[in-house]
Length: 425
Image 1 (cartoon, helix red, strand yellow):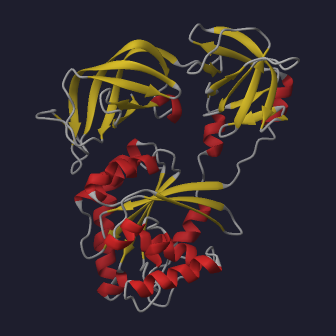
Image 2: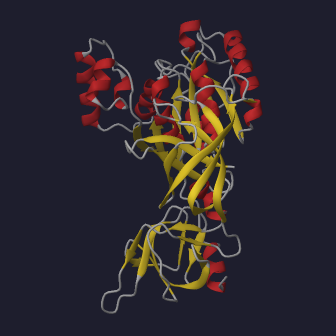
Image 3: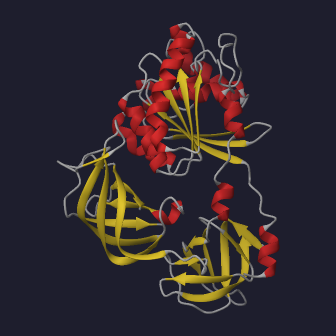
């Protein structure tokens, strides 16, 4: 590692952006909560507010329906449900946020998995009248399996139970007992009402017995994964090769998934394993001395190496593992069941190969969180442990160590549908 790289690394700072996904069972109030968060933090433009008021009038609602801020599709508005992941962005004086509002219906669990796969935190809604239902249990398990480190459960609709402290504490105890084995880095249960605004941005007047933070205060205090990703070993999947033109050297374009790269650093390229050094580095066309996880970069190397899309540039001191077979956890997403011994396309970062499911070794019980025998067909929303044989090697890390190179998806060859999300064990 170059001295310059060491100096520049000390100057890399967290951008302060927190990505979080909202989830829970249907009708628990996820969209209303996000609408309240945006409305009370004054993150809504006047034209958006006017459109919201008009839409609320068309639906015959006497007051503004804040859920419409995230139910962006007209079909969703007509049905009164969320069927896609709606992304929203807002900022407070303390930090910036990216929100993924995931659907609650069981058949859209795949959308929740998409939102959670890049999230730093999960905000799960629980209707205090229904308590902890199966879909909320599944969402908590999925969030943790997908690497989410922080979870906040918002015990919603407290206004409908008279803001009862006893009811909240019973719900909280049930949730904490269920989630304890999942070992989130932080886990909070907050009471509130998304509809009335209690404990979202403002504390409100009805929950004086609760001395914890509001939802926004807790979100502002959480650590993001940006610093964690930058401290992980370098993983740079090549997305595009820029051919040399005139005096311009060949360069390799893509997004740094983890680690930090600096001009002069030694790197290793897979497949092949050849080592070289970084000759030049650019971000959005501007020369840089250093770039970190999350940056989209152009990298020129000191040596002329045959590199193509799908290759991986890494830290030679902590290389990934070459794998011709994988033990992995699969979240099955397709309505068609898994085909025992079936062949699927395996998409791993920018690399793709064929894979065959040798065996399904166990299934995760969403009620007990334990492993049980994998009896019967693997259907939508099932979480299973599998052995997967690969036609060509992949260069992988454990999912817990590096998300990007520890994750993959399975694609049905015939339909081109994504049928499963996988995590390398």
